[in-house]
Image (cartoon, rainbow, N blue to C red; front, side):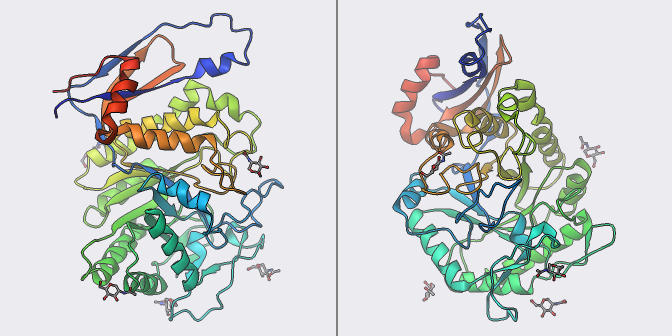
Amino acid sequence: MGFCFWVCFICLLNFYSLSFVSSQADASAEGTVFIDGKAPIGRIDDDFICATLDWWPPEKCDYGTCSWGLAGLLNLDLNKNLFLNAVKAFSPLKIRLGGTLQDKVIYDTDDNQLPCTSFVKNTSEMFGFTQGCLPMNRWDDLNSFFQKAGARVIFGLNALAGRTIAPDGSAVGAWNYTNAESFMQYTVDKNYTIHGWELGNELCGSGVGTRVSADQYAADTAALQSIVQKIYQNVDLKPLIITPGGFYDLDWFTEYIDKTTKSLDVVTHHIYNLGPGVDDHLVEKILDPSILEGVSGTFSGLHNIIKNSTTSAAAWVGEAGGAYNSGHNLVTNAFVFSFWYLDQLGMASKYDTKTYCRQSLVGGNYGLLNTTNFEPNPDYYSALLWHRLMGRNVLSTSFTGTDKIRSYTHCAKQSVSSSHMQLSSIVNPPFLGP
Ligand SMILES: *[C@@H]1O[C@H](CO)[C@@H](O)[C@H](O)[C@H]1NC(C)=O
Ligand SMILES: *[C@@H]1O[C@H](CO)[C@@H](O)[C@H](O)[C@H]1NC(C)=O
Ligand SMILES: *[C@@H]1O[C@H](CO)[C@@H](O)[C@H](O)[C@H]1NC(C)=O
Ligand SMILES: *[C@@H]1O[C@H](CO)[C@@H](O)[C@H](O)[C@H]1NC(C)=O
Ligand SMILES: *[C@@H]1O[C@H](CO)[C@@H](O)[C@H](O)[C@H]1NC(C)=O
């Protein structure tokens, strides 16, 4: 490593709280940042920033609030320049397509015998909706948009296909990949580049709605790997095998990672550490350092499992919206949410997470873009700033003084090093690496 101009992201939680907690008279806080530049503690992907698109139809509502509108994968308007340019600005932005309903999607390839209709609301169905179908002309339109926007696509496959729900609520039986396989073949025949195929959404550990055992999931992952190897045998660019896309659970992940050392490229997990979006105290939680720090056990736990295993899989956050059930209007799409988001990006990097997918790019109350008109919300700029400034190498950083200042340091991105030198020298003179 030669020179390493570093960028230090510092979030001053008390600056924000001061603006409305007038009783806090002591406005100044002194502290010291320690940065250990001997060797990086983590190395993120160059395209670390990722955002999600979901399947929710307009009828998806939470406590009477319907926040998805036409932002779902089947409805999204792909002809808006603002939307196209927002994605292009990253070139490339990773986009993960998935979410709760992905496991109930059927692909309208030639083998499909069922009518190709959209999700219909039905409260007696799992996840509140019937199965839905992706028409191939819609898949063509989506890919044409992704190509124009220079996005890298991660596609979440329907992991519930072929399984039955046992009386104890678990999903049993093997994944039936017949339909997924022909969908993958269609995709390859059309020359659409898929960066990674992800299997399943929130079915690991205790699951959401239902769950699949680690042992069965490992067998399904091997099946996914074998269909990918077969379909991509004459394609130079091989897609990544990504799973399980759910909540971290020590025992489940330990067993699963141990049983997939030969098949898995990326292990994904989801973060919703602020609780339900309907909570009226989300702002206090977002500005509470103990709540922000509380989720570090998830990152360190997964990091330790991977370090202690012979797996070569990397950890990603595959979906993180902070507050579940679609977030909270005027909180998770407002300026204050960047205190959570930027802290998450920093913390994930510190534990060697390679990619971080924000729920959502658009849709719900936590979009980087406004659901109705694609105008950027504040976190869009946080994501773009991170993408432009923060380089791959993560440096160990600690702060003493107050726990309301949370700091993270990376070497600056080479491509824009002149502006980095300016920015980093505001914090400190440029740093000479080993
Ligand atoms: C809703 O789903 C249940 C269970 O699958 C089914 O029995 C019922 O007919 C459905 N209701 C409607 C209105 O389609
Ligand atoms: C898998 O699903 C297909 C429909 O996509 C069906 O024709 C086939 O019989 C199923 N295979 C098994 C083993 O159940
Ligand atoms: C895909 O690429 C191959 C090789 O470049 C080409 O022969 C084929 O026509 C392309 N198919 C489509 C549908 O564009
Ligand atoms: C690491 O792996 C060894 C051997 O499989 C096991 O005994 C030990 O408990 C593991 N340690 C952690 C922290 O998971
Ligand atoms: C999104 O745009 C709509 C329409 O202009 C507007 O009413 C709404 O307040 C915007 N939402 C946010 C969070 O800015």
